[in-house]
Length: 149
Image (cartoon, rainbow, N blue to C red; front, side, top):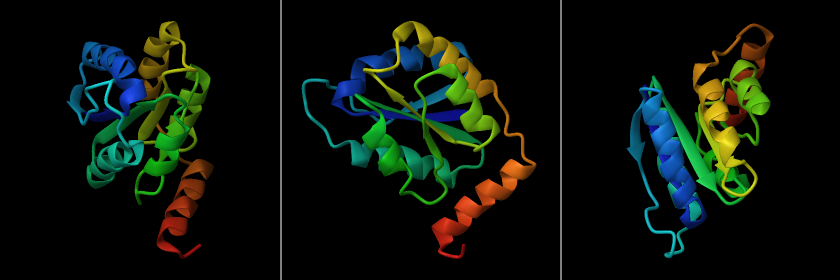
Protein backbone atom coordinates (compact mmCIF):
# COMPACT_ATOMS: atom_id res chain seq x y z
CA UNK A 1 0.00 0.00 0.00
CA UNK A 2 1.18 3.49 -0.82
CA UNK A 3 1.24 6.01 2.01
CA UNK A 4 1.52 9.69 1.23
CA UNK A 5 2.95 11.66 4.12
CA UNK A 6 3.39 15.34 4.81
CA UNK A 7 4.15 17.73 7.63
CA UNK A 8 4.60 21.39 8.28
CA UNK A 9 7.77 22.75 9.88
CA UNK A 10 6.52 21.76 13.37
CA UNK A 11 6.16 18.13 12.31
CA UNK A 12 9.40 17.48 10.42
CA UNK A 13 11.18 15.53 13.18
CA UNK A 14 8.05 13.59 14.08
CA UNK A 15 7.48 12.78 10.40
CA UNK A 16 10.92 11.16 10.23
CA UNK A 17 9.93 8.81 13.08
CA UNK A 18 6.63 8.04 11.38
CA UNK A 19 8.35 7.17 8.10
CA UNK A 20 10.64 4.68 9.90
CA UNK A 21 7.64 3.05 11.56
CA UNK A 22 5.68 2.85 8.30
CA UNK A 23 8.60 1.36 6.41
CA UNK A 24 9.01 -1.21 9.19
CA UNK A 25 5.38 -2.18 8.54
CA UNK A 26 6.31 -2.80 4.89
CA UNK A 27 4.49 0.23 3.51
CA UNK A 28 5.59 2.24 0.47
CA UNK A 29 6.01 5.80 1.78
CA UNK A 30 6.03 8.89 -0.44
CA UNK A 31 7.15 12.02 1.41
CA UNK A 32 5.66 15.38 0.39
CA UNK A 33 7.70 17.39 2.90
CA UNK A 34 8.33 19.64 4.65
CA UNK A 35 11.98 18.79 5.11
CA UNK A 36 13.31 21.82 7.00
CA UNK A 37 11.99 22.56 10.47
CA UNK A 38 13.69 25.97 10.50
CA UNK A 39 11.72 27.23 7.48
CA UNK A 40 8.09 28.02 8.17
CA UNK A 41 5.69 26.42 5.71
CA UNK A 42 1.96 26.59 5.13
CA UNK A 43 0.23 23.42 6.32
CA UNK A 44 -2.81 23.80 4.01
CA UNK A 45 -0.57 23.28 0.97
CA UNK A 46 0.94 20.11 2.43
CA UNK A 47 -2.47 18.78 3.49
CA UNK A 48 -3.87 19.49 0.04
CA UNK A 49 -1.07 17.55 -1.69
CA UNK A 50 -1.45 14.50 0.53
CA UNK A 51 -5.26 14.51 0.65
CA UNK A 52 -5.56 14.95 -3.12
CA UNK A 53 -3.25 12.02 -3.86
CA UNK A 54 -5.11 9.80 -1.40
CA UNK A 55 -8.52 10.80 -2.79
CA UNK A 56 -7.35 10.03 -6.34
CA UNK A 57 -5.93 6.62 -5.40
CA UNK A 58 -7.76 3.35 -4.92
CA UNK A 59 -5.37 1.72 -2.48
CA UNK A 60 -3.54 4.50 -0.70
CA UNK A 61 -3.68 6.26 2.60
CA UNK A 62 -2.16 9.40 3.98
CA UNK A 63 -0.51 10.66 7.13
CA UNK A 64 -0.23 14.31 8.09
CA UNK A 65 1.51 15.82 11.08
CA UNK A 66 1.75 19.30 12.53
CA UNK A 67 1.97 20.72 16.04
CA UNK A 68 -1.67 20.17 17.05
CA UNK A 69 -2.99 18.28 14.02
CA UNK A 70 -6.04 20.52 13.93
CA UNK A 71 -5.12 22.67 10.94
CA UNK A 72 -3.93 19.71 8.89
CA UNK A 73 -7.17 17.80 9.54
CA UNK A 74 -9.33 20.80 8.68
CA UNK A 75 -7.43 21.42 5.44
CA UNK A 76 -7.38 17.75 4.39
CA UNK A 77 -11.12 17.43 4.93
CA UNK A 78 -11.75 20.19 2.39
CA UNK A 79 -10.60 17.80 -0.36
CA UNK A 80 -13.49 15.67 -1.70
CA UNK A 81 -12.76 12.01 -1.05
CA UNK A 82 -10.39 12.73 1.81
CA UNK A 83 -11.60 11.47 5.17
CA UNK A 84 -8.99 12.77 7.59
CA UNK A 85 -9.11 11.82 11.26
CA UNK A 86 -7.12 13.57 13.96
CA UNK A 87 -6.13 10.83 16.38
CA UNK A 88 -4.29 11.36 19.66
CA UNK A 89 -4.38 7.69 20.72
CA UNK A 90 -4.73 4.14 19.40
CA UNK A 91 -8.41 3.81 20.34
CA UNK A 92 -9.35 6.85 18.27
CA UNK A 93 -7.19 5.55 15.42
CA UNK A 94 -8.98 2.19 15.48
CA UNK A 95 -12.44 3.77 15.55
CA UNK A 96 -11.57 6.18 12.74
CA UNK A 97 -10.94 3.19 10.51
CA UNK A 98 -13.68 0.85 11.79
CA UNK A 99 -16.52 3.35 11.87
CA UNK A 100 -15.48 6.22 9.59
CA UNK A 101 -13.28 4.58 6.95
CA UNK A 102 -10.69 7.33 7.43
CA UNK A 103 -8.08 7.37 4.70
CA UNK A 104 -5.86 10.11 6.14
CA UNK A 105 -4.43 9.88 9.65
CA UNK A 106 -3.56 13.21 11.23
CA UNK A 107 -1.15 13.31 14.15
CA UNK A 108 0.07 15.96 16.55
CA UNK A 109 3.77 16.38 17.22
CA UNK A 110 2.84 18.00 20.54
CA UNK A 111 0.02 15.83 21.90
CA UNK A 112 0.87 12.33 20.65
CA UNK A 113 3.52 10.83 22.88
CA UNK A 114 6.40 9.28 20.90
CA UNK A 115 6.01 5.96 22.76
CA UNK A 116 2.37 5.77 21.58
CA UNK A 117 3.24 6.40 17.94
CA UNK A 118 4.08 2.80 16.88
CA UNK A 119 0.83 1.48 18.39
CA UNK A 120 -1.29 4.19 16.76
CA UNK A 121 0.25 3.53 13.35
CA UNK A 122 0.02 -0.26 13.61
CA UNK A 123 -3.62 -0.11 14.71
CA UNK A 124 -4.63 2.43 12.07
CA UNK A 125 -2.99 0.60 9.18
CA UNK A 126 -4.23 -2.84 10.25
CA UNK A 127 -7.85 -1.97 11.06
CA UNK A 128 -10.47 -2.55 8.38
CA UNK A 129 -13.68 -0.62 7.83
CA UNK A 130 -16.65 -2.48 9.36
CA UNK A 131 -19.22 -1.30 6.84
CA UNK A 132 -22.82 -1.97 7.85
CA UNK A 133 -24.53 1.02 9.42
CA UNK A 134 -21.21 2.87 9.24
CA UNK A 135 -21.20 2.61 5.44
CA UNK A 136 -24.51 4.45 5.31
CA UNK A 137 -23.02 7.27 7.38
CA UNK A 138 -19.85 7.48 5.32
CA UNK A 139 -22.01 7.62 2.18
CA UNK A 140 -23.92 10.51 3.76
CA UNK A 141 -20.61 12.35 4.17
CA UNK A 142 -19.91 11.77 0.49
CA UNK A 143 -23.31 13.30 -0.29
CA UNK A 144 -22.35 16.34 1.77
CA UNK A 145 -19.28 16.71 -0.46
CA UNK A 146 -21.54 16.58 -3.52
CA UNK A 147 -24.12 18.92 -2.02
CA UNK A 148 -26.84 16.28 -2.28
CA UNK A 149 -27.59 15.34 1.33
